[in-house]
Image 1 (cartoon, helix red, strand yellow):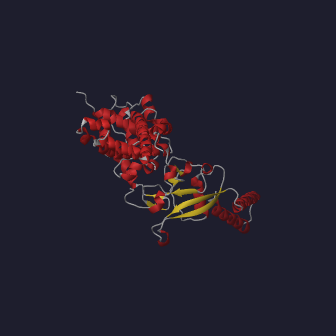
Image 2 (cartoon, each protein chain N blue to C red; image 1 turned 45 degrees about the horizontal axis):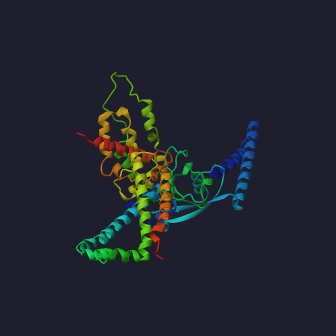
Image 3 (cartoon, rainbow over the protein chains, first blue to last red; image 1 turned 135 degrees about the horizontal axis):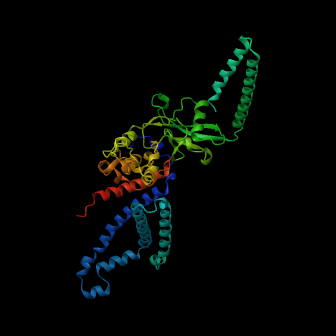
Length: 141
Length: 298
């Protein structure tokens, strides 16, 4: 159907403005899902510096001079990383809350208020993100 | 309203001819006089309406998608603007009909019953799939943009090719089948009230294809049955009179790769359905039904 015919730009005219709650929830869920997958790989890369660090001597470890501690400290020293961490938290929280919402949808519970539960998960995500800012940003500036 | 214009001129000609040729009876004269006066009144009313429209008082602006593959100058899709005088209770379909009858007779769109039963005038109005005949104009923001249904091939102007949609609908065998008959030969196949209530909403489908057009998944996957077809499958799979054998057959159809499992619960279909069928709910219930059918604990 869609693949056989291209109406050109006119096909996508104003399509974005008119999305309903359920569609936005789907788009955000996909987006946050991809972000989390991307994060997973950087997470593994950072954590795997602990493998060479584990071979280091006790004195080096206690002094915090091993590769792993150095990597973490230098990363946390970057302002960009601090800000990205807040973003990561909001993405993860939204994905979790919307995932719970989708579980309810799959169970067929409260399908009529699926839009409200989407808005609720958005608001909760915002609140948790704001509350986390002091923890993540403290001492960054 | 607008269709009356050509008719009216005919009528006045007729009455003129009548009064000239024959010697009419008193009753005829009176009737002719009456008709003439009614015509005059109507003409006056229409003149007033035209004046109002000219003074730009209470007209609605329509931007309508135009495309005609048969005419060389119209092969490039474009938007045409129509100014239609607003009347109370006017629907998008009324406005389109006025535009077609008054300004451009080549404006093409499907419509039949004008009361949300036939399902032939689903369109993309201001960015949403709507039935033109049950969409009130005063609820819409101006200018009102009318386009053919997205994700379907445009045949001309607002007419899209529905063949694919009908194919999907027929794929679920949308008719009653059973091999369980009641005992007596003349016995009726009765349905319980509870069961009727269960499938009630799903029977309301008018095959307008608004849901299919709004579905993001159906847009990207041509094999996906689509909300309307799955709803049809629900209507029969949940009908207890069909019996266990037929239900198994129906579940086999809907639990295929491009059946219910393609649905990602975006709720677009439920939002646009002009008959308020809870499509997502039905699809989800069929998913659970399919799982229950395949789970074996022994």
